[in-house]
Amino acid sequence: MADPYKIESRDRNVSIGASPLFLREDEIRRGAELLYFGYTRLTAAIDTRLAKQGLGRAHHRALYFIARKPDLTVGELLRFLAITKQSLGRVLSELTNRDLIETRPGLSDRRQKLLRLTESGAALEAQLFDDLRQGLSNAYTKAGQDSVSGFWRVLEGLIPAEDLPMIAALRKLG
Amino acid sequence: MADPYKIESRDRNVSIGASPLFLREDEIRRGAELLYFGYTRLTAAIDTRLAKQGLGRAHHRALYFIARKPDLTVGELLRFLAITKQSLGRVLSELTNRDLIETRPGLSDRRQKLLRLTESGAALEAQLFDDLRQGLSNAYTKAGQDSVSGFWRVLEGLIPAEDLPMIAALRKLG
DNA sequence: TATAAGGGTCAGCCATGTTGACGTATATAT
DNA sequence: ATATATACGTCAACATGGCTGACCCTTATA
Image (tube, rainbow over all chains, first blue to last red; front, side, top):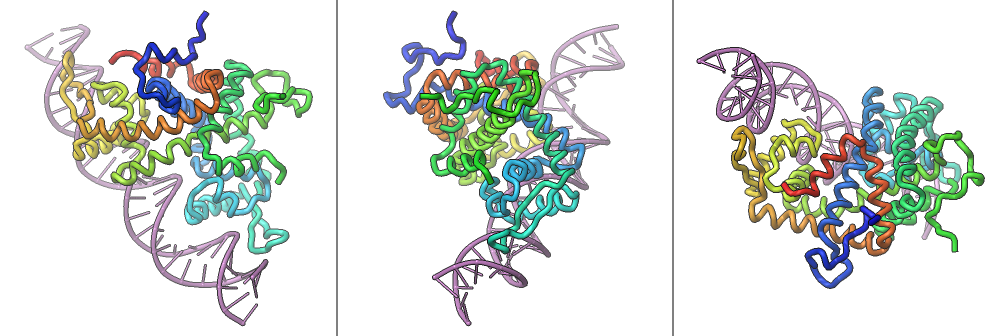
């Protein structure tokens, strides 16, 4: 039986040019749409849970990266989020007021602030992470190991080379 | 050589439980991060181009779906975008004022409005689509056909079953 | 000791989402 | 024929989370 996910052979389609960088429009649109709907549906459960606490996605992103890399600095967090420090400042002070995060001065550089989740912050992040786990585990299980590898590979290809080290740094110790 | 994208065997990791729905935290975080960064990087070029025209992402989403399904109705577009009609109304009137879209009454139901791109709207959408094409073609080419299939399969698994028919409808004639 | 770097903050603006209330034209069921 | 539902539009007020610009303090470092 034919793989329903396979890109159809070029000869059945309008050719846009000779370059392999110009694939059929349908494959591009399919990826764009699945990415859009997949992403929004994955975050839907999280948005609901956040709304119950009076928090938004911006708060979740900060909690997520702080959970992922405890004691990261404000500057590092800014690089992950790619927003202005004014925007982040608002988010961090709200999280601090709600006792979800706490800071302490940097060890080797006391200008820095090291960010950590409090106990209640960690509890909330764990709940939010569980929503991610539900969605992704389900999709991984349905799709199978080989598909998961492909999923990662394509997504990595969407990220400019200069940003990959930053993301790889998330998977290393502090 | 070992596939660097393969999920490491369970016995090397903390087991969270017996259910296959609860995979290792690292695999979940990896997917979440790649999805987040991949999506934002893919849309970065588009955001830049839109900003030059004084438009935003909301405008692009509307243009995209209208291009994808010419003569779709306002109600259909609302279902794709999952926003309120007030929000969409603002976007559509801005697009109309800039002569990027046009409407005509429904054929069988004159309460409906059928949405179409104007010539200049189609030109703009084509430019924006080209940014998508650049990003996705590049990622597809680097990852290879098998990975693209897996990419699609996992993303589909993130989408609730009740939403899949709507998305499938995009790939059928108007 | 001057300058750079990490971080904070005030003020104002913009884009894009939300509710709620209400209006009009057209379909459709009784 | 008339009542009701549907498709769409619109006014008003508000929330979130981005942005720029200007300016401040503390600590490193050349």
